[in-house]
Image 1 (cartoon, rainbow over the protein chains, first blue to last red):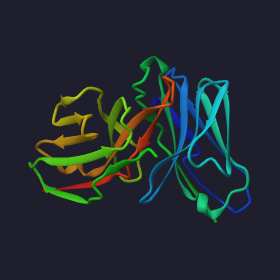
Image 2: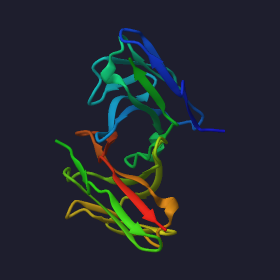
Image 3: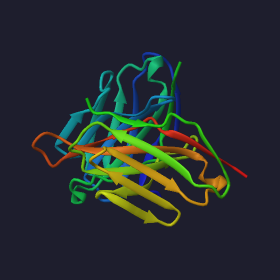
Image 4: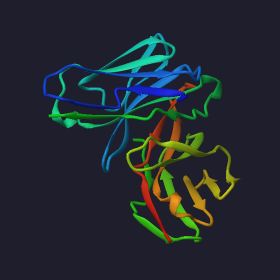
Length: 115
Length: 115
C-alpha cells in the first residue's frame, strides 16, 4: 500500500473552475507539502504545513489555497483555475523527528490540465 | 536568494561507466542534502541523503559533500540502462532562528545510460 496517496491522479478542467487536489498519508508524518513541477522549472513549493495548526506560503502560492484537515490530510485548492496552472502536482511528507534533516517522501502526483 | 544549481545536462554514458552528477548551492547554513531520482511521469524518489563532509556510499551510489565549496555530487558506478532518469539535487535550508527548514530543489540533470 502506498504511504502517500493523491487523488485524483489525472484531471482535465476548464478555466474558471474550482479544483481540489487531495493528499493523504499513512506514514505518521506531521509535515506536509504541496509542489508543482513544470518542464524545465523543477519543483516549486506552493504551500507547506508543519502541523495541523500551521500553514505557510511557499514561493508560488498565488492562485492556490490549502486546508490541513487532519495530520494525515492536506488538500490543495485552485479557486479559479487558469491554463498556466497546468502542471504536475506533488504532495510530500516529512517527519519532524528527523529534525533539521527533513527527508521528504513524495506521493505519485496529480497531472492537472486546465483548458 | 537561495539557489541550487545542477549541470543542465543531458548526460549520456555507456552501460558500465561511472556517471557523475554535480550540484552547487548558495546558502552557507545548509545542513542536509539529498538526491532524488525521477523517472519520466513519476514522482521523485529519495535515493541518497548526506549531512557531513565526505563520502557516503550506498550500493552503486556515492554521494560526496564539500560544505566549504558548497558542492554536493552523486556518482553512479556500473551505470545501468535502468538508471536513466532525471536526478534532482535538494538542499534543506533552515529558517532564521528556527530548526524548521524547507527543501530547495535544483532543476535536475537528465541521465541516459545506453547499452
